[in-house]
Length: 79
Image (cartoon, rainbow, N blue to C red):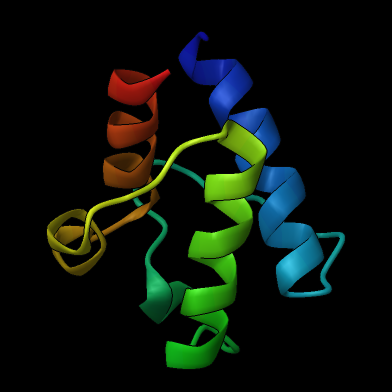
């Protein structure tokens, strides 16, 4: 899967999880950039991403992710 396809899918997921159709994530987007991104929505987000890409993040990966670009890197490796 190409990176732009990953981001298209991630944008759909983020818009759904945060209930914001205007939301667009980039490589640098982090929890600090999205007002409603807290620990509970983070769990929901990870679960939705795992389901959408048919994969599982390790706990080390989840804890280590600093931004959406790093999430996309992991997805790209797993896909």
